[in-house]
Length: 332
Ligand code: TRP
Image 1 (cartoon, protein in one colour):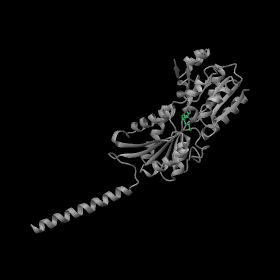
Image 2 (spheres, rainbow, N blue to C red):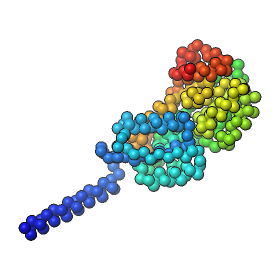
Image 3 (cartoon, rainbow, N blue to C red):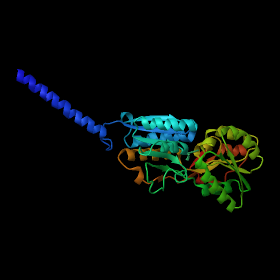
């Protein structure tokens, strides 16, 4: 009896020790997650606007497609609401919250995360120019802990569309935020291309969304068309842009499907939801063990035209038949 008790005690002790070793091993184990475990992913969205919201939905869909759904994943989501201070504090929080992979939606959010950690993987969600924004060394060989999805705008096609829909336009105004690295390169590229085609380009950078209405009232009296890059500040206040154009009725060519749906005239765009899905799949790849340093940036740049016919009617513009036929989407 006594021996049996001793034996039981020994068995129990061995079980505890062996179990303990297993548990500690697991904690130290940096290997990819196996089935049945819950992964933790931190997401920082720069600001609220239709396009970024749609990208976040796409990220969740892309992860789900790869099996990360339900209790297989816990998403730690934060939104900095366009506030640089919040980007810094939220980035630190997401790093210390025990997340395995971090995702930055839009350039300022990805930059905040990249500044907060040099070892946790950071996946860029829909970044216009990852090299220009100093997030990666090169698209093919990111080199550090950051990789993700880039969405350079199909600017040449966008300019072609402006030419076809508004053939008499001579002066194009460009509205963007002076604080977003993502807009700088695109504005330069657009200006260069448009000037080569003989247009006069007038740039109107705004320091914040507070200056949009007043800038629009000056700008609309000087230009024949307006082009807007993938700018988060402008996208988040796009209703103000449209409202300030009510009387002037200048055709607006923005760079996202969401902005065309909200009152822009037309554009050549990549799907925002699709950008999110690609980002979600990239996160899954990293969760399964891929190293950001050696994982090339996924460049999504195949655009399709989108036209808002309701806006065209309001502006008294007839969309050429061939443009309508080529459109990937028509907003009625
Ligand atoms: N490309 C933007 C960036 O790098 C983010 C973005 C994605 C965006 N889709 C958009 C901005 C649509 C405005 C509109 O920050």
